[in-house]
Image (cartoon, rainbow, N blue to C red; front, side, top):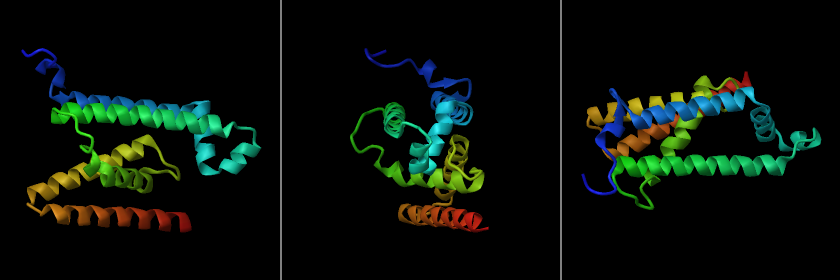
Length: 167
């Protein structure tokens, strides 16, 4: 084995890839932290109405900085996992995943949202988009049409969210 390479035994735990296990652990920790801790509820409050949160005595700047730091750490973890998946590091390697990430969050918000963004809903949205992408590849749909179809699914999720809030 070449120096600096990771043994193949670390690639999967049984039949489950390590990346999937990491994704599930991060999702579970994020969901539990946001739902059952004081800091998570305060972050929801600041995200929902910063002025009301400020008037209730929350230190908004501190929580915003913490949210950005956590998001940066998770983005770094995602970059490391993507680099390990493709076997090299490139600055623009994740550029194609931007619309998928936004769409996964909105699909999860509209389908499993319970009125607020949550980690489990985003996981559901990511699974839906992954199944959709794999299905489109199996059907030999051209690449440019895949983005159009994903955009239509995103528009449908946004419309569903709009109509849910109206009623």
